Amino acid sequence: MRLNELNYGIVGLGIMGGSFAKSIRENILSTEDSTGKIYACNRSQASLSMAMNDGVVDGVFTSPEVDKMLCLCDVVFICLYPNATLEFMREHKESFKSGAIVTDISGVKGIFERSLPSILREDVDFIIGHPMAGGEKEGYAASNAKFFVNHNYILIPQDYNRKENLELMRSLVSAMGFTRITETTCDIHDYKIGFTSQLCHVIASALVQSAPDSQITAFGGGSFEDLTRIALINAPLWSELFISNKEKLCGHIDSFVAQMEKMKELIQTEDSEGLKAYLSDVREKRISMGSIQTKK
Image (cartoon, rainbow, N blue to C red; front, side, top):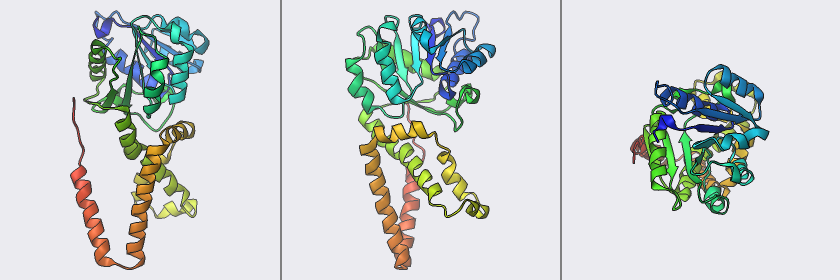
């Protein structure tokens, strides 16, 4: 079937779930020959009402009604926290449509690789994914179909995934605006995301907490603001992400602390030449990192 002939289900109509729904509506189901539908399930009735009023979804279901939705959907986006996603799969295992493709948006993947094989039905294909996009605000009201344009989507194929379903998923995320599709393993994903995302949130949080008083920002020139934008953090979500990836994240924290200690020593001993060499090396290393954009 073509993408515009499929029925899509969104579990969790927050900022990400809402953005998926809006993107699918705008980019996939907007043609006259489209026959597919978008259904959404959410705990909050307010979000469901907003999505219906916006014309984004074709049908809504409260949490107790989700089984009625799942049996209608060819593709299901589960937009919940990592452990809640796994629990949802366990609880509603028998409700998915035969042949359905299910995917997630979680920022950690090792727990999925370990748990999914014992949960999945043979006729349901769970494709592990991670859209590298979003915003700082929460809720459906903050969702936007444009969040995904020119962003990266990480796919983590598993041995049990059907080739045709992986190809459909690649086509689907490309149609939603993602221009880079990176395919990797759960272990590599968690290691790299632990550094590029989770460690950065740890550092931003620690920097805010280290401020001697809230008035110090009156002397800010932009540096503090740039470094701490991501400290506007969703505490329950990021606590779960940090703990779920604790081994890799703590390893990155140890490396960061070691570099901080090295810089502290150079400054404390007034080693001007050593400090200049260190900072010059930092500059060159950052330039060499650039912005890697590869599509597989």
